[in-house]
Amino acid sequence: MKISDLSTDVAALLESHGVPEREVYLDSENSGLVFPEALQAMVQAYASGGQGHPSITHRKGWEAYETLLSATRTIAGALRCQPEDLVFTHSGTEANNLAITGLARAHTTRKKLIISDIEHLSVTFPAEQLQKEGYRVVTIPVDREGFVDHEFLAGQIDTDTLLVSVAPVNHEIGTVQDIRAMTELVKDRDAGVAVHLDSCDAFCKTELDLEKTGADLASISSHKIYGPKGAGALFVRDGTSLDPIIRGQLSTQKLWAGVENVPAIAGFAKAVELMQNNRDQYLAGMTQLRDNLISGITDTISDTLLNGPGGERRAPDNVNISFLNCEGEALTVEMSLKGVYVSSGSACTSRVLQPSHVLLAIRRRYEEAHGSILMKTTPFHTESDIEYVLTSFPDAVQRIRSLSPLKPGGGKHV
Image 1 (tube, rainbow, N blue to C red):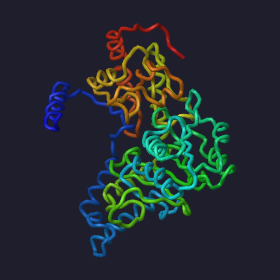
Image 2 (cartoon, rainbow, N blue to C red):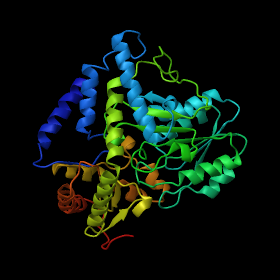
Image 3 (tube, rainbow, N blue to C red):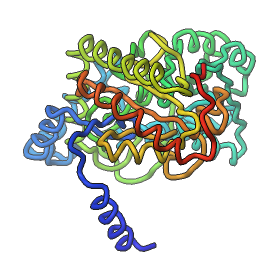
Image 4 (spheres, rainbow, N blue to C red):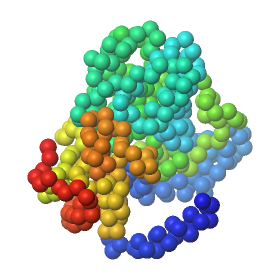
């Protein structure tokens, strides 16, 4: 189908959907809300201080370079790392690809990669590509709450192991791993094994001190902390060798060709600053709203399952619930009509009706995975927003279930 035809279809779809009287956006896993201050930092960088190419030796180039250096120092400070250890990309996906593929290109003697069963697709896909090129990929199993099996991991470390990649916080079910213990386990068995953290969902939301963790590589993303899209970064510990995976004219950094997106990076840094300065307030509020959502749904709607752990072992913003006998994609549409925006299953597979690999890994059945809804609270949300969401869900679920050939069994699943 041509783009022009799709545009017509989408315009018609939007018109038929209408504009809800109230809107609550809970789909920050995919993209969304941006701090106004971060947006203003971008505008200011576009107007002045970020117009030029930061590697060009004229005034506009120097201004752009100054803006870039200032942003780099802010982000590095939050990570507890050195500014020179950061490589800017345009997303967390690019950072993950650079970490995994770049490491493999730089080290050709070790041919074994270890990743967890619940990694983001931007980790699993590069690993699968390397597998086609002769690498061996081992996946670490997880328990029913998504915690990696440390004993299994310990048994897999050998002299052929190049990399262990585990996300400190899972993007779908919010599991907070004990990364420090995992890294120490890996390094105790072989200090030559690199540890990569897909930290996009952990950065500024949980403790992520790269000096303490001992990780060699860590990916972060702007839009996951309410900064603009178009900015990500990879921490590369001094002494860790990577080869570039894209080729082109270099700017101020050696590992990612092309001009840096200075305005987006400026917005990224402002979002980091806001999250750091308001950390306790923001995280406490997000956690309270998270818990209100979870209890408000599971206590009032039958046949529901919370996916992932609870309490402090869960990310402060993450809510993932399966509604049995209720197709998740249909429920997202029904909730959208009410002005509540959520996602079903993995963000990267939402256009393809396949169950989430993360939910299957924690032993959810296919029908349970297909009925999953992912929501994330933010500093922008209020108690009133969550109350509106909770009043909207029952009717939406009842309507979708009424259309299902399978009838609810009655009672709440645990």
